[in-house]
Length: 400
Image 1 (tube, helix red, strand yellow):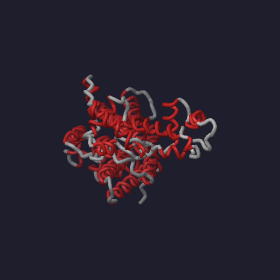
Image 2 (image 1 turned 90 degrees about the horizontal axis):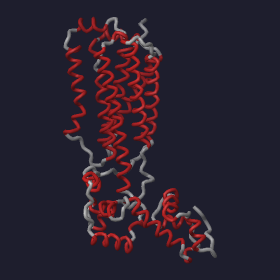
Image 3 (image 1 turned 135 degrees about the vertical axis):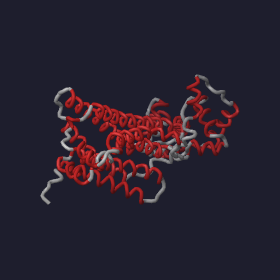
Image 4 (image 1 turned 90 degrees about the vertical axis):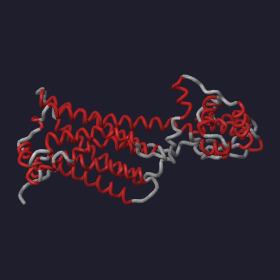
């Protein structure tokens, strides 16, 4: 066989497609908790495998001609992945954030652009016979691209960018909501999601610029080297996919997830309406008495759901009282009690032999960073300084 199908740039595309396909299949085979998230991530990876194949078939110097001779139906099929990538990324992010997440009918709206593009390709290409398709493909160069196709391509890249932004907004909203649900958030890790979303968001922004460069070169005779820009994108995707696989293999569960039905909360609804709901004074007294008598905040992993169960109060109601009456989110509310407990212990002469670290752990904290940050914010000094002032005759033996 004397025909050269691949150059080095083509091999990078093939490697990207191969590792995405392999890792996607691995995710589908592994049966573990969070299978819906695994399935969505696998489908997302399959789109990342199809896109390099579309680039290879459309623009590979030797591979394009081979594809024309083998089957012109190979063209544009893999291109459908561009329109599926964004919804799959958004659904994957939501499946990690919300423990009860399921696809709903409204989610199908995100597939409307995909359906519209499929109809367009059928009318403009797939409905023709093989000879007509070959004639349409022969002699093609990017400079021959019609303005309509360029506009569709530009819209496609912008749409992918929009889905990336929506995914980021979901993560930002989740990071706000966890402070109303968890008392310790240090182990809630968003690095995996942020690397994935920010990385592909940057690439989609770059793809918009590549499309603009192609339009300028093809129709306005403004010479911009869109080929180099495209190659840079291909190599970056390969690196990002490799990094994504590495992080996912060492990735443990981010957290148990929020309840999508309660994540919006009454507090957010009240802000939207501009009205503050009335606070039940009896419930306020019940919460205050329980916090003082039972000290549930000493449990480092205390959550809003656990506290609501102990108080026999609905989560939404409890969250509303904490936000409206105490004017704190759950994270701040619990750690305020922990700081008061730490102050009492630091000022207690009978606990002078305890290290500050021991007192920190006994007060419900599990990291120095959060403890020191909250203590200095609420007390105006470090725990060690507070102990020295409270027990001047017996300096603390250890500091955080």
